Image 1 (cartoon, rainbow, N blue to C red):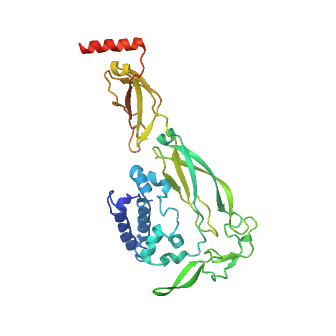
Image 2 (image 1 turned 45 degrees about the vertical axis):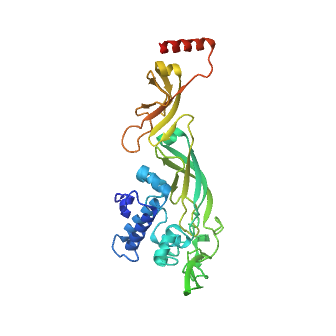
Image 3 (image 1 turned 30 degrees about the vertical axis):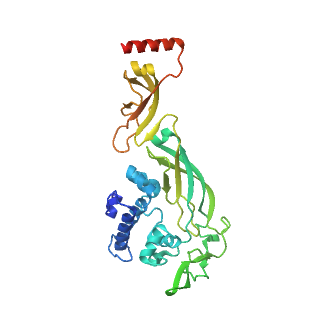
Length: 366
């Protein structure tokens, strides 16, 4: 498998490119390498690469994850081909069913229902996506973790292999004549226009069952419990959504499966805050320790450590614990931990304490 190229390099733009510049670059390259227009041997491969780059960079959340974590940050966004839409024929069904996004954009470029991908109209109806939430502890997000997700989804019936037919026996669909599409004539300002759509009877497969499968009642799929293990990368930010292609609901009549979206929710820590590889926290110290110096105990993601406080420390002073942060995403070692010291001035004094402070004041005034 060829090594992936940087998404910005694929579209020929720099990292500061605006959304409009990204869209403009994509339009130009998609037209140039569209397989129906470009007959070069590698045109289809380049078109897939261009589509993948646009899918990531046109979405702010996906782009941010890619900028920070590279290709590892896009694993859940389907950064591995066409994002789970299969071959170019499957893309035709996907684009025809969408009102915006890439479907709308390609529709603008190639017209109407985007018939350029009609070669696989008999693909059936695509399955829906599934979204689940995954809670991570603070430490799990810092160091990465393998998690097991349990959810329910429609899976292809193994008795009829998704055909929905008893004994897998099918016949030509009478509604569409086996084409998988029906054509309607619509009147527009520009005159009459033929519009092709997926056949509502066979869902694009071109065939219907002679007798419905008893196991799945003719739907070609069954609802089952699913267990799926995912590897969460170290340093994953809160709020990011990972996408796993073909892990959603199976399509009808062997249509393309949907995707599984896993939304990450990172629990907050009572004392620590993560910013990239580094950890930040506030540590309150008493005025005596600030004046005379001393040693305090602070929590880190690697356990509690003793930290020296220099004498004469002022409030808001920041100390650094080298390599006590999270694992570095690129390279070896860990980030650092930064501790902001907050000096607590006493608000109530005993008579003895007040006397001592008055004596200190007298000494300092001499």
